[in-house]
Image 1 (tube, rainbow, N blue to C red):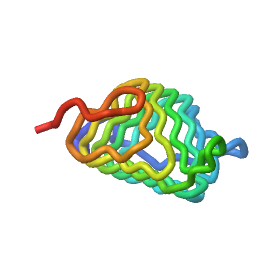
Image 2: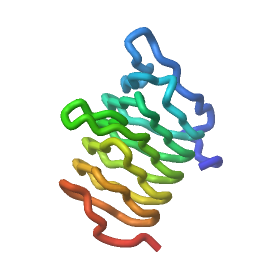
Image 3: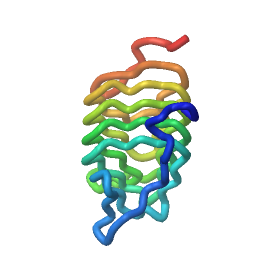
Image 4: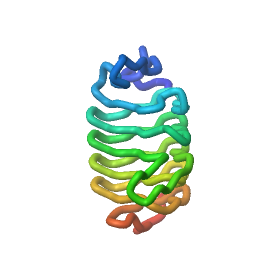
Length: 134
């Protein structure tokens, strides 16, 4: 993505007093958020990084996604890791302790409650691998 004009002036986000960015996505506990370079997060995405969220280089996350390192419903806790070049479709939910593998794609409106291996496409509720990426 180095040659991509879209990211020519890419800069890491800053957060206001409401934990919002200028791109209208938010992160609670943003001190526990680790972002790689050229990360693109869609508007209205919510990230809870209480127990850590790491998003590696060149990741794309669609709008209206939710990423939880802590679930208050079932009290699950755990760091979320999204590896290099992964893509998360709009309106998807990533639960605590999940790792999404390098180059993988999570389809829109998916519910990810288990690790997704590298180089696959996963979709659904719950998300399941439907094909490998060559």
